[in-house]
Image (cartoon, rainbow over all chains, first blue to last red; front, side):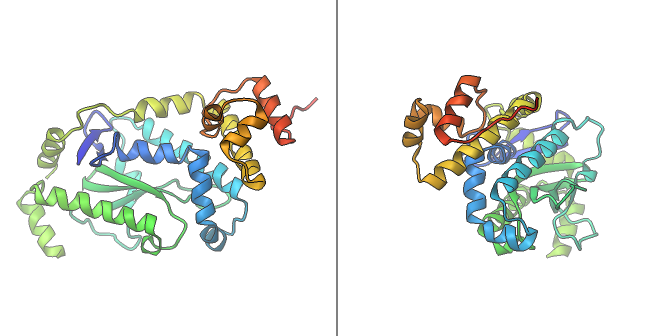
Length: 182
Length: 100
């Protein structure tokens, strides 16, 4: 596993997994802009789209994904060096309010008209304002454990978190916090 | 923690640069016409699925190569008016409309 610096000041990184020719950020945005990939995805997940979002038009789902992807990508592209990334990323679990060592986080578009955005970027929070993007997904269900493609993203977050822990990236204070969470 | 983590990430950076920023910038700058290209790709996909056509069969109907159909379906081709007209004729549907 390797890492790509997304922002020059080192506050945002993306994982490049073994065997991949680029990082997770490039991979998800390429997929979210690929009509064929999106067609196959929504064909396979049409039942979720209907039951959770009440959308039956596959074409509309693809157009909305491409539009949202453009918005989200521009948000990241235009992040200024002094921007507060804590405003973009939020804890993965909506109920979590306390800081968690190497916490699992998500980014999504807020206040999208018509329906909530189903696009998610996932990341591990190193500390305030500092994140590593591990992947992304089209989340159509209430929880990530319900579908294989979102479950895979959970597993990737865990994999990156474990790698960082195994390599001692947390200091004594952080390690005590980690033990406390166990 | 941040210093240790950043040191670890710096030491484990990829050997080749990522193309994400370059591609994202390109998508942003070309957004308007890319939307047309992506819409045409989606309409072609819809037509091909409905008619049960392979890329090769679609290419034959349009009068181009299968490789070109594959590129069109990626939604990143800046199509000529001639190509759009050929796709319209092959699929018997209007891809673009103009108000008088």
